[in-house]
Length: 265
Ligand code: MLZ
Image (cartoon, rainbow, N blue to C red; front, side, top):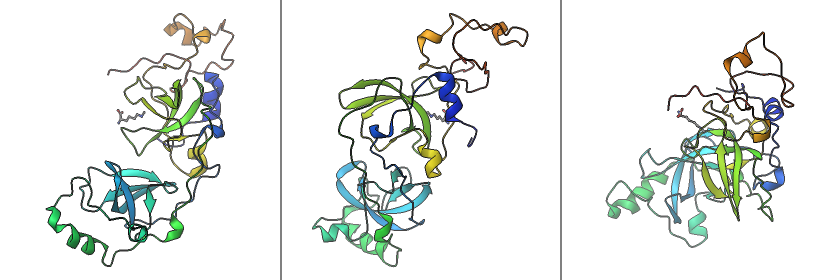
C-alpha cells in the first residue's frame, strides 16, 4: 500500500489546499534517523509524563522510532520522531538529578526494580548523543484553517501516517479528519502536535504514506457536489460533464470528489 498515492493529482481533484509548512512544529528538512535497532535510551513514559524510563528501539520507519519501555510488555510500544523532546541518551537522568523510573505497569515486584535496571543496562548498546536531534520550534500562532490538507499519524494505528483534512479549528486545537474514512480515526489535538506533518513530508523523509480510505468523503466541498452521481454518470457513453469542476473525470478508487460508498462497516 505504498507509492500508489499522489498528492498532486489528489489536491487538484479535491480543489483543496495543503496547510502551509509554517503551521507545523516540524523542521523543513525531516531529521535524519541515526538510531539502530536494540539501542537503549531514556524516554518519557507516555502513560506517566512525569516519569523517565529506560527504553529500547524496537523498530523504525523513516525518522520515527518504535520504543518499548524496559520492564513493560510489548503491548505498550509507542512511536517518536528522532527530534522528539521526549527522548534522551542514557545518563540523562543521572546528569540532571532525576531518578530513572520503572514504567507504569512494571511487570515485576517493585523491589526488583534496582536490580532489573542494572541488569537491563549492563552490556547494552546505548544510542550515541548524535542520534538525538533538536526539537523544532513551535509556530507562533495557529494558522490552520478548515479544509487544509496534511499528513497525520493515525493514533489508533500509530505506525501509519495518512492523508488528512482539518475539519475544525478551536483555539489552540484542531480536529484532524482522515480522508476516505468515516470518522472512527479522527481526533482533536494541539495545533503544535508532533503527529501532524505538511503535505509531502512522508515523501521527503522516506516514510510510507497510506492512501486515503474509500469509505465516503466527508471533506468534499459542497459547491462542486452533484445532487446524485448515478452509475450512468460513470459509463463510457455518458461524458456530458455539466459540472464546472473536475476537468479530468477520474473515477479511480481514490478520487476525492466522488462518493464511494462501497463500505460495509
Ligand atoms: N486495518 C485498519 C486500518 C485503518 C487505517 C485508517 N487510517 C486512517 C482498518 O482497515 O480498519
